[in-house]
Length: 121
Image (tube, rainbow, N blue to C red; front, side, top):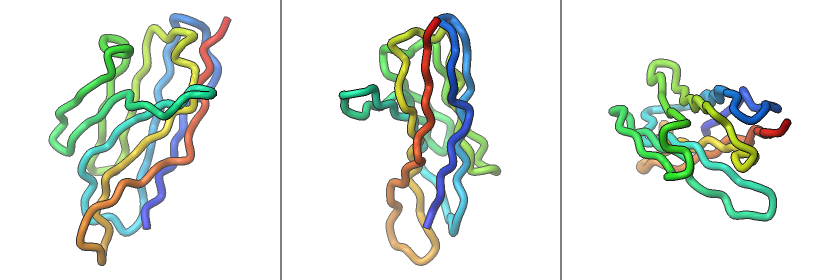
């Protein structure tokens, strides 16, 4: 199994910054794509940013130019640097890792527990 532990959420004023981290642990053979999602109250979970094992990235239009996803493959960790935060960024942020676990033939998607980000003055 794989455990994803997120950290870095909190309360920030509009225009401020936060950096989220998500560390994966367990019987990991290989982590493919890693991603961040958000879920606002009463809404469906949606993709924020994704990064491949080779470092290619893609972003939701709403965060382009403000958020940066990165990863440290040696630490099995993905980051989300969030700048110029807006009230509409308020949500629970989840990381996801497509991971091949020892003893399994195919990779599966694993999720973190979520971390709350609140942007308010």
